[in-house]
Length: 180
View 1 (cartoon, rainbow, N blue to C red):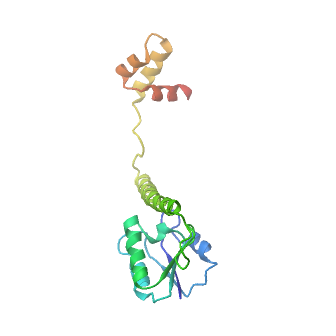
View 2: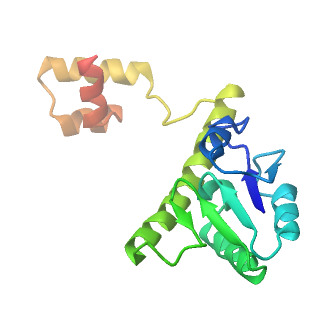
View 3: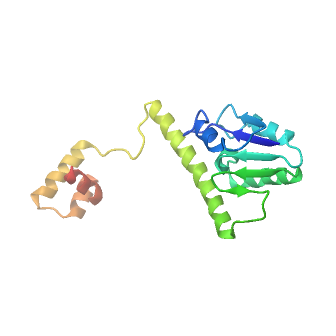
């Protein structure tokens, strides 16, 4: 039996991207997680409970399945204990087949998983902060300090270190304002 597992995430909240990637696979069952959270993954737990020997769990990419390398290892151990298999389309992983990836490729996939976890969490947090009207990124320098720094620079009477000391404006910030 082929079980397709879908989980919404920041860039695919309706799972449409995942569905399109997985339409080539003949699914006997499709489980869609109701929320993107890494906690209370009821759908995933149900899928793992229902798997029988020889069944295959299919995901679009590892980030949908696991939230960390440790979590991925735990899930792979559960699949192995049930004699079930995993297909992850993006990484071209199919545990039915003998190991077809080099150790370097496997390590790159794990690094990419960790990077995806951090990236998705960061983007989600930034979007929520913007929705709440919070300022994101580095705080802007006070306009009067910037104006003063530009005037000091244009007067050609001050060195960059003197301008920085008196205004708190760094060289790179000053140049950025001079370009605009």
